[in-house]
Image (cartoon, rainbow, N blue to C red):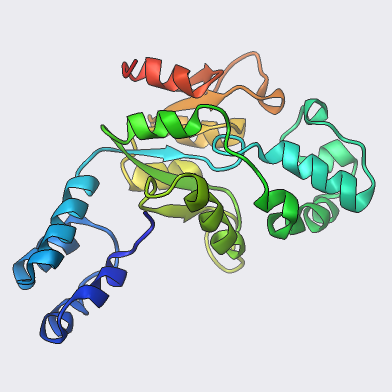
Length: 249
């Protein structure tokens, strides 16, 4: 359930709300511990204690596109419908659509980006085994979503994930470039949240995570074929493979 701590403050009585309002808004053990010292309402204490147990679990990162949902296939359908292409999922042997379509990076971005607000995007279905595997992993770990999508697509992204994976993700991180702000790689995010591992489909993202000494499970796709995998990277073919490597089945 994607619920920032500040949203839970709405449940507090006015007096306690005044004391809590200045606490950090991040979902952190520090914040929840402070709230427990302030709050007397039993219902609120129960909620906070449940959240505290949840966030004490070790974290792992999960990509959204082509790890949770079949995004590339949906992008192909969108480009075929809107721009008259005849691309199939198996044709996508590069992560970069500018190379695939023979366009400049700017041109490719211009025609691909609107996909995130299309019917093809909203009609995407989860990848086989993802929900079951995440439910199993969530008993031991706390999954957080780490996507290279733009923060402009945040609302649609979270809505899609929550529709099919309700309550499984407590946090969402968007590493898409924002003008005027320093670039942040998925490796940077994984390091900052102390992720135990990351499930990813892009080689360059796997590289930034693996270089931090963090294990990466690379979901096999036509666009991530290579002779030598990035450091600390294990190729997997199904979500069950992740469970096997984590000794959960």
